[in-house]
Image (cartoon, rainbow over the protein chains, first blue to last red):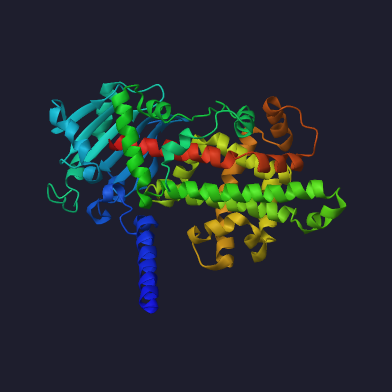
Length: 172
Length: 295
């Protein structure tokens, strides 16, 4: 009798420790899935593919690449020591909500919808997937200058990028 | 891993010794230094807009990005944390050695503590290596060529000039003297593998440094320092930095200092977190620049 009780208690204790371990340990941290929005990185275009599509720097200007990650590449347009604008191409696979703002857009550049975000940022959605953005820095750029920069990106090259298929709608 | 980058930015102190020391060094750099501790203000500056809805969107995106482990923003911060802990521990030992020399019982501790220039050089090397590693964690490998990468590094440095000036002054010019940059390579050559192991930060960073074993890590650190030296030399000559000037600049905010330069360096090591403070701000700025482009 005593033995059964001892065994029972032991098993209960072991189960309790196991349960507590599962609940309390940060197991989520150790599992794969540390990607943005938990989208598998194979579905996101690598930022390297975007680099060649940035506009050429004008005379006296300089294009410096600053960030390159999966689904994102950013450069700054500099004149001497001052930064004129941030230029970026991103894959909206990890941020589907970013596509929504283009539904209401009426302006277009090379046929792609254009949206203004505040006084210094202009964004373009290419092939319903890639967002091209120009953000004026410091003294800022006026909208016409920003649109000119957007137009200078290799937009047709971007639209033709061999992109991994988007996940089916509603899957995420 | 729990706090996001922007939360950590907002927890930074607004006024303490760290901030005062950085303000002092900031007087040496054109444009000075601003202690940015408000995420909203940082976002508004990058976006050029005060629209609260837009700021909230950028912030939400930045939090998503900094929670994704593979993106490296959190990893960069833990690198800075490791270096900061090491700096405090090393500085504490040196402080003890300075005080302990006068107390008979503590004299043995003083004899044991590594106060040598070699160890200081290894500490600086580790900081520069941490800087390079954090750069690749935060920015990836920008551009298609090595030239692009070097340009990106230089650009990052000029965005954080006060950070770099503080690193040069606090960890090279003050403890090692004005010829520190010229001597650094020679000093690093004398760093033995066991010296590296004595640095607390090394244990935290070892897994992130490319190569296997201490010899490989040491050679990575030396190559990293070589890359950095050219740039840092330009900064020093461009701003005319020296130990003397650094102390004078610090005196404007911290008050008069009558000790030796290396004592000043020890004091700063123990009582300030300049490396982590400016590091958090630099990572937050890069993160916001990305989030602003992705919303």
